[in-house]
Length: 500
Ligand code: BG6
Image (cartoon, helix red, strand yellow):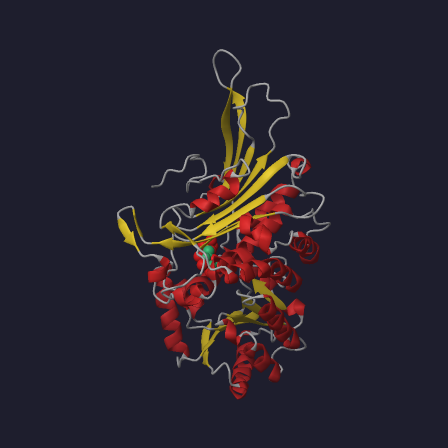
């Protein structure tokens, strides 16, 4: 049994999709693998009128389906920790009942007033709920600790991000706020840090002297999946780039932290964001490609174009694809381009970082000598692939490309935690290392805001058919520098794209 403080997890937005799909399954797995505290309660909160029993039944049924579980004693035992409180979240007076309920649960489960408030609600409530909690003293740490988990988006643009930050800080201290970026919860994203700084082999090469360029790809084969209403107001820049991809980039580019703790690590990531070379209108004319998917047939299945999706404006100029060339103004990275792309309805689901090393200074085996590449696969088929040249067997001295690979699924030992499991566990432990800090979020917006401004003033979007790798203009982003994107397959070691 571990030694976590007993606690209550109060989930606002308890009848929502995120709670059902991610939070409750993550809590169940932590419970089933005995990683939660000895005693805990879960309090679902939302406007819908459920009783404890009806809410529990709903949760249990959804767990049985989504996690493919049997109706077992363990499942019933887990569900017995779940309670429900109907609440008009925007009405301060309503929180008196919530306060009483939390106090009663604290007594029943011996949780000493330790509470995590999880805001799994529309962002419009991010300001309101903390204020209402504070009104009833529910933000105070004196009677057990209080933590607030906030889901992205952390603002819609720079101004609203600053406003949100001020609102949150009015009622909760920064140490109490846990901003979730689920990419930081991914084992393979955390591994970027360990891989770089636990090996003497790679770090000496990890700089402008040896690296030619870096590619970061996050491709999804899904479209907007019924979230058209939300997505049309966000787009790929806000939905993926401003948060997830910049966090991955920071892990690739940061300096070694002096210590492994939340401040030391986050101090280094924030420096990367602050060193991103600001992109002005002129640079963006060349270095930014925004695309939107159009209808097509993929593997025999007809797929809608973005503008035909439910909840999307018929004339929408929201981007479903972004490719951007950026650079980092510091000693380590000066002159090394980073090419970053993300999109929906691409041929496959894959997130990876590719480090392209410089060519040998004198190509004794001819111009066709392969480049050295390190492919760090975040998902799926998680692992690392190193590509290098070797003598082609036979006469002469020709070089050919070969690879060495490591796959996560070859590791024995503990099952890897999902992103939400890891992040929920860390928030219970009070470890904010893998959560976005206020200064980092604002520094990301500083970089992204001019891009959004340009995107707004120039609504040109390049079309790409569903199931293709995005607009051809994105290829030109690299080809004009004499480079090309890697087109990855869902299997790490299949070097040629092979799924269509
Ligand atoms: C979410 C975005 O934050 O991340 C989604 O809102 C996207 O649009 C998802 O599909 C991707 O996450 P993952 O873990 O599947 O790569």
